[in-house]
Image (cartoon, rainbow, N blue to C red; front, side, top):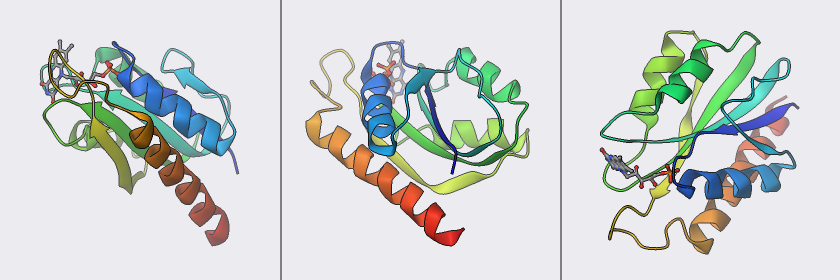
Length: 141
Ligand SMILES: Cc1cc2nc3c(=O)[nH]c(=O)nc-3n(C[C@H](O)[C@H](O)[C@H](O)COP(=O)(O)O)c2cc1C
């Protein structure tokens, strides 16, 4: 099963989750600057919101996917909104790429809000979430 992790992170919060997820599933976390290398069964895609939208780099990455992706699994940090699921969903729908219903989202620090988040517990939960996604997909094969 080919698994990849890509993320965009301006301030490092989403990067923390990306690294925890990547370590849990045994791959390297790469930024969205790095295109996917070949067909991918599960793509963990990390993003955040800045004034209600995901960064242009995430849009560019999704728009330029030219390999087959079995499914994308969303993960995100944000200060106020629940997750970036809705925003990313639109990008993937335009490319007909399947989007998993399950996602991982937690608070990300912003100004004086949510200091220290994602914290160790958030990262441990993200890692466990990712392990379960991969295990379930492997069992279904
Ligand atoms: C310029 C800017 C705008 C933001 N706008 C929002 C927003 O509209 N809604 C929200 O929930 N969080 C907002 N945030 C908070 C970020 O989503 C949060 O800090 C997130 O964890 C940042 O992730 P990153 O460190 O991976 O870039 C904003 C943060 C910045 C810096």
